[in-house]
Image: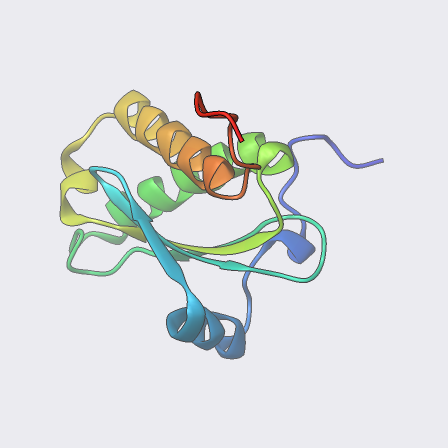
Length: 127
């Protein structure tokens, strides 16, 4: 039995082909410390790929902290996300922030991604 907040292999972007597909057809969404490229997928569930370059931090331990926080946040939000592939790109400012701030930023990003694919909200105008 898998935990509800797991991060199985099926929830990860693994191959260069997966990442290349996103580069060609994706839509960008961003928050202060992260940018995401999003593309719909034909199977259920969201998948995540991470890009935390040496421009973000020269120290691997600091880049790994950002990736660990991103994976944890994604695990918790995955059930609420639509069927999309997400390439999460960290910005240089992410290295300087506390863990709680990064979690809050990622929560905002997941909400924005979920809202992109939500059915149109009922407006105030009549049909």
